[in-house]
Image 1 (cartoon, rainbow, N blue to C red):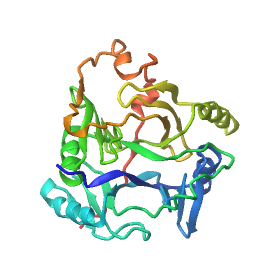
Image 2 (image 1 turned 90 degrees about the horizontal axis):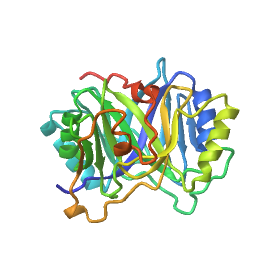
Image 3 (image 1 turned 30 degrees about the horizontal axis):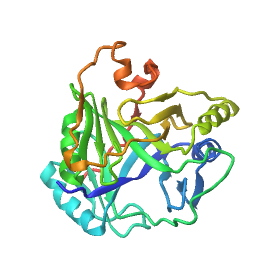
Amino acid sequence: MTYLVNSIGHVEIDVTDMDAVTREATGILGLHVTRRDAGQIWLASNGRTTELVLRSAKANAVRCVGFEAVSVQAVEEAAARVPQAGCRVLSEKPSLDCCAAGVVFATPQGHTFEVHAPIPDSIYDRRHFGAGLNPVRMDHVNITSPEPAETQRQVEQIMGLKLSEKLVDDGLIWMRGANRQHHIMGIVRGQPGLHHYSFELENFGEYCRLGDLLDQYGKELAWGPGRHRPGDNVYAYYVDAAGVMVECSSGMALIADDDNYQPNIITQLKRPENVRALNVWGTPAPQPWLAHHFPYAPAPQA
């Protein structure tokens, strides 16, 4: 199946305290505000119009995860596939007015996704050296689903994502798009929600800065630094003021020989014996990281 989606597009979060989340997103993660309207704040790490959208709300929840299509025509094709995959179209207009096209849809498992045209990107205005880290881009999300294999089927059918790797019991599944990055989406077994979103860092020294910045804000690392076996990326995690898990990632593997690649199936599931099947440096995931859950806001009813 042909890829309709290239990469992660943006994440929209409902938050009760816009100032607190913005303060950490700029001061720790190093994003910059690109738009501030009544009830919403847009942030980005580079020259894109936005990567993270905060919406003022009465409860903290993920509103939508957006994926960037390879073209406007790909958005139209994805929209046609939504009903065929057993999902429900919520809107055939983009949620972001900077996008030329978009389709927003809900899954039976409780997720709201969007496939949208590429977000405008000023490629010569990518570096923003503020008080926080210097991330390159948002590079992936991990969502939680009560039926991971069914969610996999939906994103394969609607977006053309492909399987890169998974646990043999479907407890964790990694899916890639047209940019050939090992995964732009992870699917974790659990109640519908967002486990984390991730921004890419350029060098390992930024992880030292992350630890010190978190200390200044009275926070701490939730896990890491370490190196994941699936994807081969370096990682560190913390939890922001809204309760969202944020990953800082570096060096995600690329799957160049896409046509001949065979997805890896991880069969060693017993903990702690399987630590190095998942983490090269042998550090097991702590229980709070494993149990973390940030809920999805209910999708609008027809």
